Image (cartoon, rainbow, N blue to C red):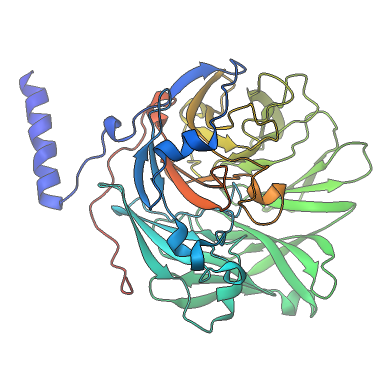
Length: 463
């Protein structure tokens, strides 16, 4: 070892000793492998095989070869009265169930436990990133709160490192910030004065700096969708983008400048993309059907999503918005049309000013073809053809676990702010749904992955 290397090593050890930090090296994110898009599929595990490596109680485990990745079971039968099937699916791939934990050795997680199926309502968990220890902290809300009966779908943690305890929620016409540690509320906006009574918001999104927010506006009494609104918090003003067709949903890029509304405007077999510049209100309309996006997530000035009319099977493509709105390359595709590996794309780990070659997204799905091993798959967003295989999803859509329907049983998992942890829900081929994390070995896909969490723990007063 050279003198320089020795001094760097000693310096790192002294810093760790002074701060109490324990570095998470590459070995802390083991397993996984790279293969080319459409390289093939693997046979799905049987329920018996799954139960041979997944622990029955919350805690850590290793996925078997060839995966060899590190998993964490978050929920177990003790979380539901009588071991019932009470765990709600994680909200969706673009709503973050994990907090902005960049400045802490602890990561906060929320999971909905349905009160009408033996659960205690939305629940807070904590992961120690050094030891991988998972702790059940307790209910998010005090007994008697109306939010105890909410599923938690559509809620998400702030991406802002200065707001690590902030959870975004909706309450009729109001967007709320909820401090999950101090249990205090703050109203971000109330649409009543601007849009009148009998109006609620739905499916919110926020920029990573917490300064711009979007939501679907709907009629409270009928549920009718009216269009998409954007709230500019710095000026406390709204921009309003009313629907022109059959409205589906809207999303917001991580910078807060671009709103993407998906609507059926009469083009056969297509949802048009209406892309709005929140600075000017100007609209760019992409009516397809070729190239328009289905399931999508956003980054800083771009979106990634499914192009259902692409010649490549189940292809996902990139759209860039700045300096001009242009279609980019295919970023992932599958071996055939019967496999949609990254059906629900997740990219909450997007970073500003970082090249596409150093950015990655992940996706998940559960197919009705029981012979196919559905997996958590990650990919760079630069059009190269390497994909990272992380872990099996372990879901059988034909099993009873997962409450309600096929959609509820799909994983729809989401990445954390660092892109190193992926959370999803699965029925393990059995009669109940549970929540899991996997540590994503993203260093195999992109370099420069942050592997050293700061030391300061989160002080949770109601553990």
